[in-house]
Amino acid sequence: MPKFIAYHGKTGAEHQVQFNSLSQQGYRMISLSLYNDSDSPRYAAVWVEKGGSAWAAFHGKSASEYQQFFNSWTEKGYRPTMVTATGKGSDAVFAGVFEKDSTPFTAKHGISKDEFIKQCKWAQDNGFILSCTTVYGTADNPVYAGIWEKNTSNIAWNYSLGDSAADYQNKFNAYTAGWVRPDFVTLSASQKYLAIWHDNLIGDWVAHHNLTSSGYQSKFDQLTSSGFYPICVQAGGEGSGVRFAAIFAKNETPISRKWSVTGKEVPSLSEFDDYVKSLMQKHNVRGGSLAIVKDSKLVFARGYTWAEPGYPITQPTSLFRIASCSKPLTKIAIHQLVEQEKLSLNDRIQRILNLQSPGGGTPADPRLNNVNVEHLIKHLGGWNVRAKEIPQLGFEPMFHDVETAEAFGKSVPVTKYQIASYMTGQQMQFDPGTDPLGDQYSNYGYSLLGQIVENKRPGFNYTEAVKDSIFTPLGVTRPRLGRSLLANQASGEVRYHGKIPYVGSSVMTSDRPWVPGAYGPFNIENMDSHGGWIMAAPDYAKVLAAFDLDDNPLFKKEETAKAVGSLNHNGGLHGTSTVVLRSGKLSFVLFFNQDNVALPNFDQLNDIAKKVSNWPNADLFPTVGIPA
Image (tube, rainbow, N blue to C red; front, top):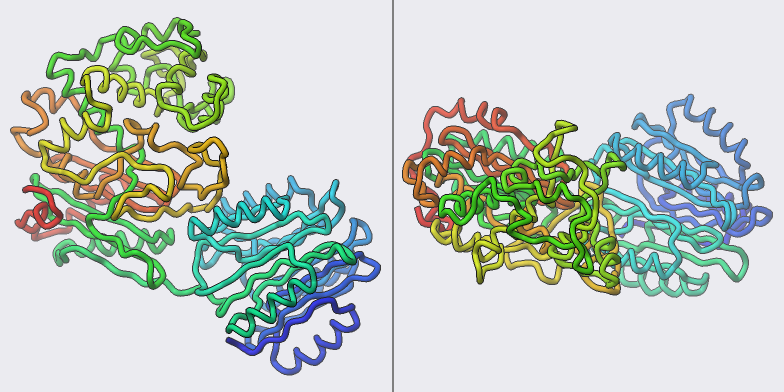
């Protein structure tokens, strides 16, 4: 624990005395908070003895004086690193710290909630991070100030604002359940909380909020005697209504990540290791897996981990949500039914499913009667996932459980069959078989394909049917339907992390608690045939390998296997990025446990493959529990 000095309840003059003394002794502020009314502001600060770049600080300044200080010191090569304010608007008082630093930044004060949200969105889109913030003004008209700096460490981050103490606690519980920690938390005079959340580790830490001055002091005494020190102390309110929020830790510096690789090393294919390492470190992805098939043999199967010590090590057999890479599996299952003459691609789906709107009514849109199986396979059924970007076209139903529940007069969770019924009561977005935007994509269409599989395989649900017709013939036993809630995750399944971590209201239980973004705000069980599978990369590789054989074990007729067409697909959910690629007799399966990773296309990976002069002959399928 470093040497530190912390105080609260100090006047401006008392804070100045501390500043004069501590800055001369080699201490510098790591936390600063201004609270109480602007006529008698109070200061809370934490000072740590440590070196660093040149710095300057100010306190007790009006908004215009803060602007003057800002202009003067930024011209000297300094930038703001802390800002805090209290007051009801025009009489607000500011304090802060500037450091000599060339890191790109933007800083604003006196902005509205909407402007603050817009600025944070800009930061997330452009590689910046909210590093310090404060809220002042009134309960009816809160005003914000913030500092957004270049996110040089590529930290996955988000923020929450406007929460009561109880709501903040609920979000805190959800964020931390998803391995995300509060990096900074402050509160307004009206006890509304504003927090910055980071998906990184600093070791042991403890956070408390809604503390009175004496309550904070009690926690301070207790925790500092146990080796903790405060790294963030903020307060809001006036007089006896002042409340504190604090984060204590044994270390404030994020723990460095370590790189590790599992699975059989293949020296001639080591450039693939380098490629995955570069991609994961660029995007700060903690877990990945790559499987490569050549001429029906698994020649490469590796698990990659870029994470803090103690994080679960990714194995070649680790299970990942594969998201929309589930769709090619559903397409195979449909073509198997066609080969067995249980189904035709020209069959009208309504004659198979007899879909009815809520309450048993007929379809609201007669065009539903014209949708056939092939339309669904080609995303031409009449629905469009991108409709959320084009309001007049409707929305993506697989992520709108609440609307479905309301249509049935019930609460979540809903079933995929209820979603289908709800959609039958809605207008379609375009004529089946057409492509008006040239950019159609429908998760819902593939959900219906899964229901057709169930209809044509009596006694099987979709997952059982695909296991029976695809995985069992290939000797693959691991794939299964993913589960939404963290408590129900499969043994050997990876953790999921958001590029932008968030929490949402669960759609899995009627009380709808806040849950981590990857664990309950969407119902993955309902996504079975369009995005619900979990499996290991070699499991999917075995499916692709089957198409390398003249005698494909999944089909009796060679022309049926050819009719399946391309199996190439990307997948993405919060916490998931996946891609499966096949051309000729070379296939790649690449899974990551974070969303929005820049996934490669076949040509990018094939450029690496072209450099390989000595492809291995050994088949690694048996080494990962799959028959050759």
